[in-house]
Length: 350
Image (cartoon, rainbow, N blue to C red; front, top):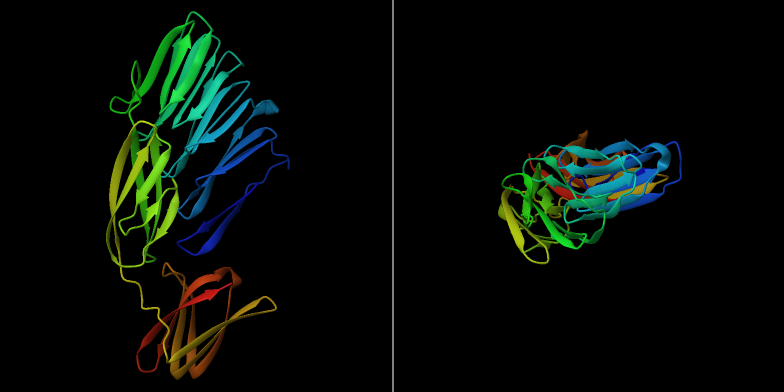
């Protein structure tokens, strides 16, 4: 299994490979930076951790290849097999994939649902519900046994489980305040906003944990709005920005807010004293730098400010630099000249 994401902080693609013993995949989905799949006797869950700048992956055993349900919703993967119901979610606060399995004596699962941060199902005469507590970071399980196995109108609405058993209505919701499921209760909407500021690139990654909602709206403080659950954002100017996340469902909404401070980036405008050209010949990447002043040193960095290459100028006014092809993307080239001036230019290389 291959999975890939564009890392806006470093302006490069991040790739990972998860080896499997088979090339046949019975289920595959990709939403909000989460990739899930099933093949052979395994179920996979992968998430890109923007803060740690790497993929996280988990492989679960699915003995006998007996998948009967497989649903990815609000970053929760829920699936079932002959041994029970299994759920996983990537927690951007703890940087781990947190999973839970409920093993049942029955192998038949009906009314299997995964919606708005809640997983629910029935088997035999029992109704079950699971949610991930977005504040306390644990899976909260609930079950309710009835005298009858006759379930009708089994549904999740805004994180609340409603159904009828033998004609009698039941309702269960999750109370985030008491960290527990309650009968005759509407699930409390909750969001937990995760922002990470990426060094000097003026980039933030945004992510969240939510319960009871499925509509996301980030206002980034600079007039820009993002409606994806997971994203990168680059600010054009220095300043303090208030980032607000609004999570909504059909009936209500909730908000959470954080502040980020962006710093000034080097001046990247073109400069009359310097000419930088990029060339690719036979797979070799070369920068041609010409100056009307003597070049003392040249530094190549990515947008985060990480030093990729440093080259002495040898007191000349021209320099050819070959560099690693994996650095392709947006580079910052700093030219140190004999007058003590440092000239920064942005170079786009592909």
